View: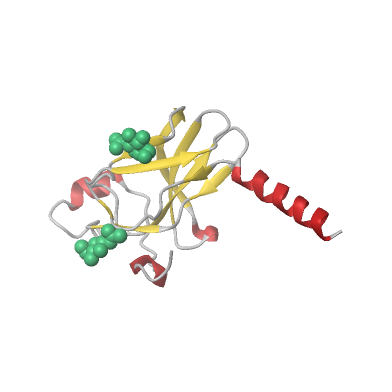
Length: 143
Ligand SMILES: *[C@@H]1O[C@H](CO)[C@@H](O)[C@H](O)[C@H]1NC(C)=O
Ligand SMILES: *[C@@H]1O[C@H](CO)[C@@H](O)[C@H](O)[C@H]1NC(C)=O
């Protein structure tokens, strides 16, 4: 009895492992202009990566598609200087699943469009509202 329960537990765990998952150990120090090697595994079919922002799922807004139809297991992403400071995460999608990365903040991203490059930043991101909801773990306290 006990061993069959353990067996089905193990099969359940195995099933989770074979679904699409990102394999970056952390999403710390993601910096404007600095390439980040995004990695994942166990995709079924081509993968697309979408950047979303917002502190909580209810506030998530799609910023844009980073890449789609990826058949490799990594993608080198360089965060654009037109992105404002916010809480972001990346949605991985394959033919059957969608998985969110850890949330992260962009290091060196401008807080608002009040700098000298305000015009170009505003042109690139005209619809953003600045709602700051920083989770404490973004500074390294958590995973
Ligand atoms: C992130 O950057 C800070 C400041 O440069 C540094 O102290 C910290 O070790 C970095 N963390 C990681 C995970 O690279
Ligand atoms: C990204 O990481 C993957 C897995 O470690 C590696 O195969 C790939 O060469 C890396 N890409 C770059 C551009 O560093």
